[in-house]
Length: 260
Image (cartoon, rainbow, N blue to C red):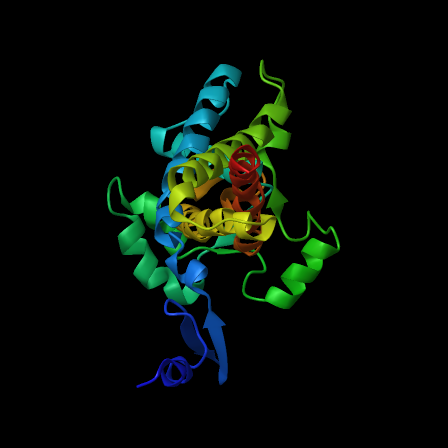
């Protein structure tokens, strides 16, 4: 076989390129994209979230945020972490059709309360169009949005500190990821730098979705009795992906600036 025939049989693609079909359309993924350490970036997401959680716990301890049982404090602290990502809490209920399944599981001592979120749907979540419309229209009260950070009483810690923790942790995660894998990747433009942020974002979104199950709290209201709150999962998808994409990419850009 001549070299011309070999090139023709390869279809003009690089040896490391990969072709995938999406809705009948073939897309060629370049070798640099295929070889990028996506899994390594996703693996850094739990650590980044844990860093935000620990930092938030430290700040909350200074300010005296939260009260009640350990499980309740854990859930409320998690919701505060979501609030710090611009993801509000929303009231929620267990649909009647799921009550026979949910009650025995939630009733399991210890772990049961952590699984309440598996069966809890936020207010309006079953009607996504009207719910999203309410969000865009700023109808906070109507859709039951709560921001526990904004509602807290005066503390020794400025509220803005809570909102800075996630960006700082994600910038650090992006910097560490890019610095560790810089020699193994080809990064020649800012668009390629964004891959570091996207890789972390993919894993971070999964972590937040799991967290939305674990961080479901029950509050007691004098007017309405027990009220279940959990992170708004619609905004979770938006900000849960946007935050790491922006801030982890910024951290990777710092490496790009230093190396080029």
